[in-house]
Length: 237
Image 1 (cartoon, helix red, strand yellow):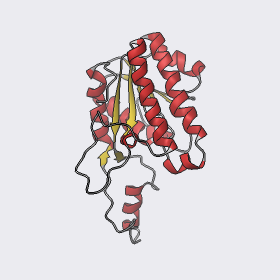
Image 2: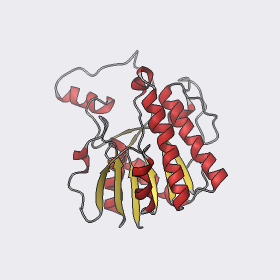
Image 3: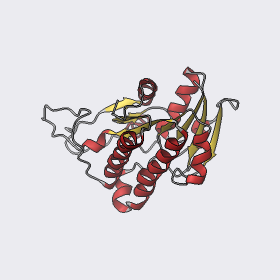
């Protein structure tokens, strides 16, 4: 399968994907990660040194990105600022990483003819009322509601534009909330579980009628691989 560059591979979802690829394929993996608060190097501990390496760097830095993309056969782009509340307090890092970072990667894969898969979010589609029978599909109009989701929508559109304008071989996947190994204990599902273990009553939000979609990180990883292999239509998969 060759050499794979995974951006954001020290984060929760990205690290699960790295483990999945090393366990289920014969590829080698380079992780490019800024190692912010959302990353955890311990999630990548014990991986085979002959097939894995970690590079600390910013996806918005072309000098860092260029040589890594040049030696890769494909790029899977997980890196993103992704905390909704943080985006409301300070939107600028979301523009720098999600927009400029994705642009920097797209220009690099364009120059080197490298396959690109972009990990997005269902939040670009907005919200549905609880009793709404509709479901989001690949053709649902984007309706982001926060600086986070709007910058992710913008990065999706950049990918589509680079496919159409420059012939970049790329795909996009829009996934719902993930849970699973290496997730920070403050996230919703780990916190509810640890509360139960510690004898603390789980927190109920509102009246308990809200609905949220979840997918296990391993199931997400298993879906990314065939999506990436499918080809470079630039359409969501």
